[in-house]
Amino acid sequence: MKNKTVTRRKFLQKTGLAAAAFSAAPYILAQDKAGTRLPVVGSGEHQYEVIHDWGELPAGHSYGNTHGVAVDAQGFIHIKHTVGKDAKIDDAVVVFDADGKFVRSWGRQYKGGAHGLHLSKEGKDEFFYLCDPKRHLFAKTTLDGKELWRKWAPEQCNGYTMPDEFNPTNIAIAANGDFYVADGYGKSFIHQYDRDAKYIRSFGGKGKEAGKTDCPHGLMVDARGTEPLLVVADRSNRRLQYFTLAGQHVSFVTNEMHAPCHFHTFGEVMVVPDLESRVTLLDKNNQLIVHLGQGPGYGGLRDKPRDRFTPGQFVAPHSSYFDHAGNIFVVEWVEVGRVTKLRKIA
Image (cartoon, rainbow, N blue to C red):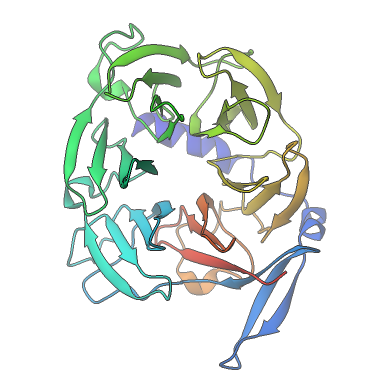
C-alpha cells in the first residue's frame, strides 16, 4: 500500500536511537525450570521474563508480519498475521491456549492484509472487530471467524475520492457500544459508528495541529480517568492524542513517545507498543513507569531471520495485550513474525 510504505519509510529514517536509551530498560538473565537462561526486563514492581517465539505453531502454518493480539475471557490467545510466504495453510488468525498449545486457526480471506484485532465483550458473548487495509475493509466476526458484517469507507465522509484511499488499521469500542475506526494507513480520519454499525461522524484527518492526526495507527477508549476518553496512537506525529467520545480534541502526550502503535490496560497501567524497538508502560497519569526491551531500531533487522534478533530486545513491536494474570503478549512487525510473552515475575 502506497500510504503504508511512505509512512514506514519515514519511520526507518528516524530509528537511529542513542546508545543511552538502553539504560532506560536494562535486562538481566534468569534461569527457567529447564535450565535455559532467559532475559528479564523492567524494574521494581514491573519485571518480566522474556519468552520469545512463544506458542507452538503447527506444521503447515508460517507467520508473516504479526500484527494483532488479543486474549479472550477463557484465556485463549489470538494472533493475527499476514501469513508467511512458505505457509501451506493460509489462515491469518491462530489461537493458542495459555500454555502455548495450538487450538485452531481461521481467516483465509484476510491473508496478506491482517491487521488490527479488537476483542469486544457484548453481553455473554465475545466478538472481534478487525481491520484489513489491503482489502480496504473492517469487519465483525465471532471468535471462530464467522463474519457477521463487513464495511468500507463511509460514504457520508467526503474525504475520499477512491475506495482504495481507505486503509483501516484498528478499532476501539466505547461502553455504550459506539465504535471508532482509525484510517491509519489512509486519510488519517477516525470514523465513529453506533452499536448497530450505523455511521455517526468522522473527525481527525491528516495534519499536525490539535484535532488532526497523521497515521492514527491504534486507538482505545481509556477509562482510567474521571471520564472515558478516546486515546489515539498518532504515530507519524510521534504522540498520543486524546479526544472526547464525540471527537473533540482534549490533550497530547508527547513525553517518551517515539512511534506508538496501539494500547491495552491492566488496572491503572497502560502498555504502549512502540515501533521503534520498545514496549512502554505508563501510569494512570501517562507518566513513564518503564521501557521494556529497548532494541537498536528496526531499520536493519525487521526483514532478517530470527537468529539475528538479540534476546531481551524488541525489533518492531506492533501490538501488545495483557492477559488475566498481568503477563504481556507482544507481536512484532517483522517478516518472519514474532510473538513474545513477557511473564510477570515482580
